[in-house]
Image 1: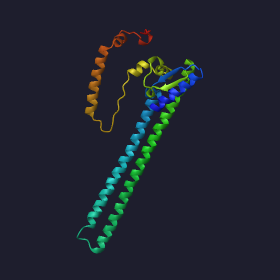
Image 2: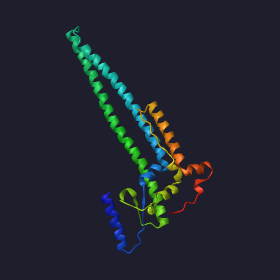
Image 3: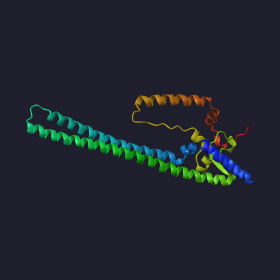
Image 4: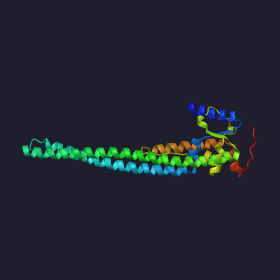
Length: 236
């Protein structure tokens, strides 16, 4: 962050030295990515891919458990005192083969999972690159309209007045309704999420929504049929 701030300061200083007008704006890239229309679909695609990989892993683990059981049974057979010398040798050879098969299956699983993690990361990076590229195009168009010299990520600056934040402008250009985005809630479910967890979340979310609605004058206006978008808010 310190290096980015120094680079921004150097660019601004250079422009000032040339006598050029410097119009700087900030934008919350993390927020824009989160609320970009692509993001919901991308997350679903990533979750589907992850589920596929987990099913592949679980199937491989089931096979490994079976192979381990076969090896352990063969090893017990080789230790049987009832076997003759030739019988013991043959049983030991069978146990060794089953051990090698087990070790190979474990090795393949490790390599496959490493490859799948890499593929999932690459898929996520491609999606993020596509989304950020789209955002940069929109930001560039807004910059031309507003005659901005420089647009920087809000995460790289220590302070910026709200008047120079164009995040809302970018969202509008993307067709994202700001009111809808502020009233959305994302919930994730994992493999270990229980029915009790879901019931607990539902109960507390409903309670929180009711409490917040009771506090909100906008909710009362919406209940009265007032279109919130039509209200002209005054600057203070």
